[in-house]
Amino acid sequence: MSETLTLAELSRILPLSRSAIQALTRTGELPAERKGRRIYVRREAVEAYLERCIDALRSRTRPAATDVATSIPVINEIDGELRSGRRFLTRVEINARMVSTRARILDISEGGMRIHHARALHIGSEGKLSFEIFGLQRVWTVRGRIAWSHLASNGYISGVVIADESEIMADAIRSLQSVGAIEPDRESLKRKRESRMQKTLERNALQQPLGVRG
Image (tube, rainbow, N blue to C red; front, side, top):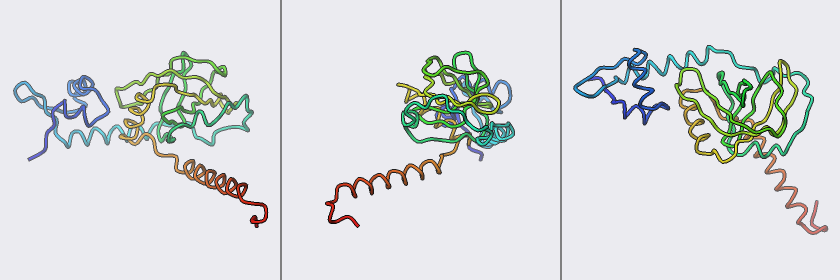
């Protein structure tokens, strides 16, 4: 017998609210059946829906990370401030809006993100930043600050620092990961480990007596 799930159970599994799941059942996007006062969805229907979402996401274009002209740095405020937390690269298009400026997310972490946008954003400007992904009826809204900005082809690439919104960002990252929209930036982690190791070696060398150094 096929396994069935209630809307409450699905809301704990999928990155969607119960009302959003109910809306999907009403439109037929997520086939369901009613038994008494409860609505049930078959496991196969859930898996088919997720596969459609992933296929739709992957079919949409994303701004290539290499699609950047020779960058002209405008300012580079403490880059480490933006890189708090593990960084993830986008695999599909994730739309964002910084105040009234439309953008696409290039990479994301709990502490910030890089965005590509056509209109200039002033360094130090703050405001509401919202972002969403096609196929998920979810919009995340946080407060962001433009930490740095580079001129790039077809616009600009800017770094946004997110302050005091760790729970929202953690939820967003979990949801985006669950549908395969982002993946860990393993190269970045490798570079950080190598840099940390190099600094440790240099610090140890400086702490040794002069006669001991090779």
